[in-house]
Amino acid sequence: QVQLVESGGGLVQPGGSLRLSCAASGSILNINAVGWYRQAPGKQRELVASITSESNTNYADSVKGRFTISRDNAKNTVYLQINSLKPEDTAVYYCNAVRTIRGTLQWDVWGQGTQVTVSS
Image 1 (cartoon, helix red, strand yellow):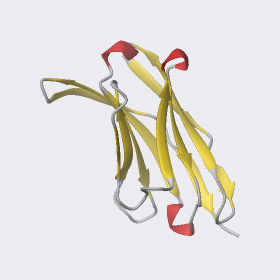
Image 2 (tube, helix red, strand yellow; image 1 turned 90 degrees about the horizontal axis):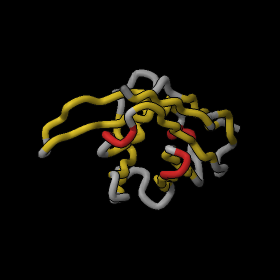
Image 3 (cartoon, rainbow, N blue to C red; image 1 turned 30 degrees about the vertical axis):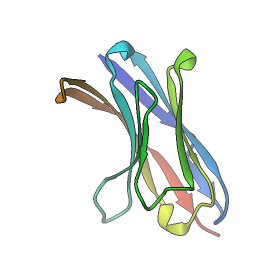
């Protein structure tokens, strides 16, 4: 069983930066990829960035150039660096870990989320 705990959210002014953390515990060797999602009020949850166990990364077009996903295997933590924050980045940010076998999803786990609010 894998558990995820997000942290690092907060209130920031437009143009500011935040670094979100997703700390994993449990059977982390079974994780194939971790994704950061966000959900704004009244909107669907969307994937903004992902990183595989081989450190391959992928980003939504809307965040390319501003968001950077990375991992620290020694700390079992995946980070999301967010720069040049905009009011439209306001959302609850969640991390999600997945286990796949030959491309088939076996399980996934969600963290509890961390609120990011961008406002002056």
